[in-house]
Each structure stands twice: as C-alpha cells, then as structure tokens.
Length: 223
Image: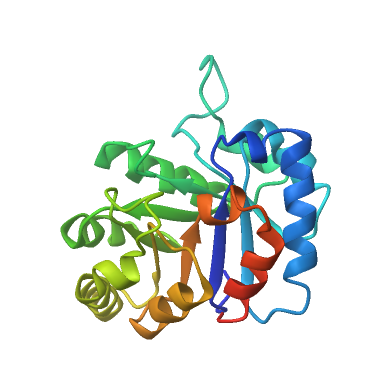
C-alpha cells in the first residue's frame, strides 16, 4: 500500500465509462495525472477490468467483490477473477452496494489472502470503528445523501470528516482514511486533506464531466 495521498475514481456504470468509453476515459486520466505526486486508482466496471488494466499503467481496483472461493457461485464476483484480470484491489460496501458486517469481514479476509488491497466504504463513525478492526487498507467515509449531489462532504460536514479522521487514526493508525460524496473540485480535495484525510473517492464529477482531463488535473495537483 502506498503512503501517498490518493485519488480514487469510481467509473460506476455510467455510459461515459462503459466499454470503449471506459478505455478513452482511462487514457485521458492517465495523461492528466502524468507527473503527479499522488496515487491515482481507477475503479471501472468488472467487465472492463481486463481492458483498462492493460490500457493504462495506473492502479486498477474492482468496484466490488464477493466473499467466495472458486466453485458454484453463478453471477457472483470472485476475488481471484478480478486479480487475474488486472485488479490489485477492490472497493467494498459502497453505499450503492451495501453488505452486512459479517460479509464485509469475510470479503476483506479473502482479499488479504490474495494480496488484494481493500477500500471499505462506511456511512458513519460508528460503522467505521467496527470495520477499522478488520484492518482494511483504506476506509472511505461517505455520506450517502451527498453522493452525486455536487455538495462536497468536506464543505457540508467538515466537523464530521475531521472527527472521523482523527478518531480512526488515533485507534487504528495503520488504516488510511479517505472521504467521498459530492467531491467536485480541486478545492474540495484540498479541504479534505486539511481535515485529516489522505485522499478522496470521486465519481460523477469526473466521469460525467465534459472535460474530465481538466477536472482530474485540478484534483491531482492537491494530492
């Protein structure tokens, strides 16, 4: 796991980040962040993992994996499969794909067994303290009401972000804290880091932008 500040770009299932569009977006992002001091992670759809991981040199994560082993699990996402297709980690428990605590625990464990990094999303400090005990690589604090709103959590709830970062870092210093929801500009990234986070999780502000390269460049400069 890198000690650098991190920008995680979630492609979600937007048309602008599907198939060949995902490849074009990944190339634009790679060009925009050339020379940045921060770490850039792309999280495309699982069906695009192989294509993206073989297109750019940036780190690629899956958007989700399931706590399963090879076998009869039709329709589930096997951690071994995302690794074989170029992912070096996965987002877990995103607000759009929530999991029960026991499933999160077994998923983090499975990823650790395979050497896959983990970004576990949480909605509250209470939830964060429970999941931090599992020792994920990254803990992403996101308010679901702000996701995709254009209202950044770093401005809407700065005290909450600061408390989250300070509390988790005090009790679990080995877990890296990032935040997300509504992050839309370089200033939002800067504010998040000032509040104690080591990066941000972003989606629509970049993926649906008419000029994603410019937005990424602006955000990356504050890492």
